[in-house]
Image (cartoon, rainbow over all chains, first blue to last red):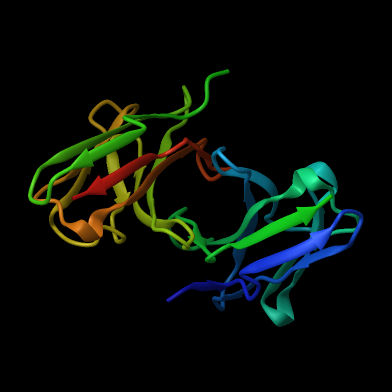
Length: 114
Length: 112
């Protein structure tokens, strides 16, 4: 069965620090990969996605993620976080040969201190 | 344009009761998904509709859960004989076929 692991459950950073959130998945076939964000009191929003092509994808608000197929990873990065990045971040995978359902990780709560 | 909407936003019910949760997808989106999110967890897939038919219902936990989408737009998730373990936020998402899923605000279900 497919699964997604997010190893950091809680991350606390100061503004301007760099961010990297880990995401690993278990599935041997071709996948689509996503990062979603949930700001306090808001619903899930797409940050970025990878379907094919350049493994380094850029999303909204200065976020980027790199797909490393050999490591089954899709880590999220941002060079300099802001207080407004405080949110919960979810990595998700869709196996291309299955239905379009998303398999989510358990999420990482990021707190950015001003 | 309007996003995905879900009603009610909150539902409190007693153990053993029947509940219906409604989802209005983005207009024109043919695919509709239901997920369930428990506290401290990521969303968990329940069922996926393509048009009026359930293309994948492998995530429904048992036969107390059922969902319909009779006209290929609005969907209703139905839970019979609710149990305390059904308490969660129920999320709906929609997409144009195979593309990004847009999520609604969710319905918080509390079973007392």
